[in-house]
Each structure stands twice: as C-alpha cells, then as structure tokens.
Image (cartoon, rainbow over all chains, first blue to last red; front, side):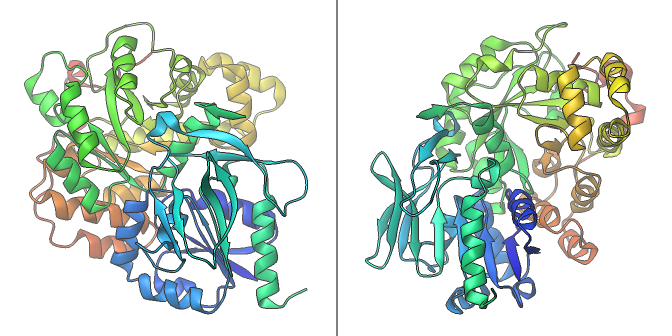
Length: 187
Length: 294
C-alpha cells in the first residue's frame, strides 16, 4: 500500500512522518508521474496560492482529477481542502472560504468532536484556516466551529480545515489509511 | 476550549511556510508580483538590504501605511521587520496584525544586550542565527522560526552556507553526547539546557529552520535546501535582478525541486542578470550585518 503526499510546498514532511509511523509506504508527489500506482493521496497544508500555481506549472490538474475519479481516497487538510474545492481542482462539491477566521493572530486550537470517532475530542490546530462556505447535497459535514463547517466527507474524499499532523493525535490519519486499505481491498 | 497564540499555533504558521520562498518587497506592486510568482509569504520593508547597505544610516521598521497597503494587495502571509530589541516596533507590528515579525539584524539594532521577549506577543517571531547557541537563545526567548543569517544584501551565498553548516553540524555533534556532556554543551553554547537536550534528542531544532542572506539564483536555493534549510528567504535577490518576475518563479520552482538538478537547470535558463553582488569577504567588519545579535 503506497500513499502519496503532494509535496509542492507546505508541511508535507509532517504528514509523511505520521503516515510512515503508521506503517504506510509514502511517496512525495511533485510531478504527474509520481501519482502512478498510488493507493491514496494527502493534500497537505501550506499556502493555497503557491500550491495552485505549482499545480498549474507541473500540469497536475488533470492527473489529480483523474486520480480522484478512480475512487482512491484523498485526504485534504487546510490548503488541501481549498485545492479540492469548486474554484480550484473542482474535485469536491464544496466552496472553501480562504483565511476565513482571519490573519495569523486569529489562528487557534480547539477541541472538535467527530460523530464517528471513539475517544476524546480531537485537539485541532487551525492556522489561517479556511472553512466550508457552501457544500452540495452529497457532502456530509462532520464538524463545525462557530457554526461553520471545518470537516467534511464526500465519498472517497475527506477534508478538514485544521492540522492533525502538527499534534500527536493520529486518529484521523488512521482513518484515512483505513479508507485506503478498504479501497485496495487489503486486509 | 478555544486557545489563540499557543506556541503550537504560532509555530504552526512556520510549518505551513516550509518548502516555499519568502520574498522581500517594498510596495504593493512588488508584493503582487511576488504572490503571482508563487511566494509563500512576503516580507514588507522600506528598503531591501542591498539598498540599506548602500544608503547607510539607521534602518528602522517600515511605515505602517506601506505595510497595510501590502496586506490589502495580497492574501498570502505578510511579515515585517522590527529592530533587534525594539519591542515597541514589534508592538506596532502586532497591532497591524502582520502574520510574522522578523526581529532582524538587517535593521539597525535598538538594544545592544537584549533581544525582544517574544513570549509576550501573540504574533510569531522569526530571528536570525549564525550558530546553534544563538539559535537556541532566540528560541528560549520565544522565537517560532530560525533563519540562518547569511550576509543580507550581498548576493553572495558563502555566509549563508557557513551559518547553515555551523548550525546543522553542531546539532549532529550534539546528538552524540551523553547526558553529562549535554550540561557542558549547554554551558559552551550559552543556551538553555532543556533546549539543548531536546535538540540532541530530536536531532533537529525545536522550530523550523529557514535560510536567508545571499540567495540570488535557483541553484543557490537548491544548495541551501540540500544543506538542511526547510525554506528560503530571498531579499534583494529578486527585485534587484534584471527580471524579477521570472527570477521569482524560477527560485520557487527550484525550491520545490531542489533535489532534482535537471529541474533546477531548467529553472535557471534565461533569467538575465542576477542582482549586482558584493563579495562578503571583501566587506569591512563594520559593514557586516550578521554580527548583530547577542
């Protein structure tokens, strides 16, 4: 089982570390050929403008849409959530609002309860984070802050506006890898 | 419970800037060019280091009106510089809600003994360092990101390489020490013992380490990334070059593909002249900026 982490810019190394600690084979993705044979993909946090330009420069738009169309799980965090929305890669039926909580001085951490996650709430770190401004009918909202959706799922797509890779809570990465395992059909 | 400005939240923004290029800009037009070229953040300042060097005199925090203009022009994070020890300038920058404050040796120091108590601020700080002891002292004071200093405004990479190697080499040596030796290392580094011990255990600084001071080409960016920098600051290197937009795009591309020489080569093609440069070794001691900081 090999999962990719989009490595154009951002905290991709932190995601790669969590995923390899959980036993996954991890590959950094910078060009379309890096997507070949991947069973799942993480779109990390970083600067969404920088990432958008990087995706254009590398010609990654169509290959990423084709990858999503195979039904392979994609886990988008923060800028990754923005990349997947209607105004960027148009992979997920959501519209993100960038820097929705404000500048860095308004960045925060908070406890988030997920409906189908056992144990204590997730301590979620939000950095100049987006929220989901609008979502289509097939999108399930999983968590909110101040009434704004910050976590959602649509089929094989799972997005959150915060950064589990910066904390020590591995449950959301475990969940992503479970999705990947189910997709591959491995035990 | 919602908590703002925790250390994790402050360091978190530094984490998001990894693998990217932070560009010095002096007005909203340059900021827009930087953003359109793929900068992960901009550093708003009145004069780039090459001009500060040329003009001489006292270099200070920028005009808040200029900083606000840049904040309105772009959506990427906006950083700004305060003088070393000038906590009132930092307070002003915090009230403007810049995203990161650089307590910078490029400006003329305001205090020859004390750096700013950075724990007192909600905004994260980046500080320069030439060696591991200096880096850990800054982190002890609350810095959330370290940048190796290099020699700003020269376009000469040699000092950036020296400082990066000083820091990464010292970390590697630290990882081989036993518990008793770590106490001596803390004394010799003149750095807080618990940070020395954590660095030895992790084999890396407790906060992200970026590189600054002398990066002028895509290959320069590749060099410092391969030497362990996690992102790069480019000051005079972009807007003092012949074709700033093309050079900015090229340095962004080379930073992403720093380990792929063919991509760095492609990015380096046809960029025109780099900034007019100064050989750092030929500068007088009084002209060096990297020695500022204690």
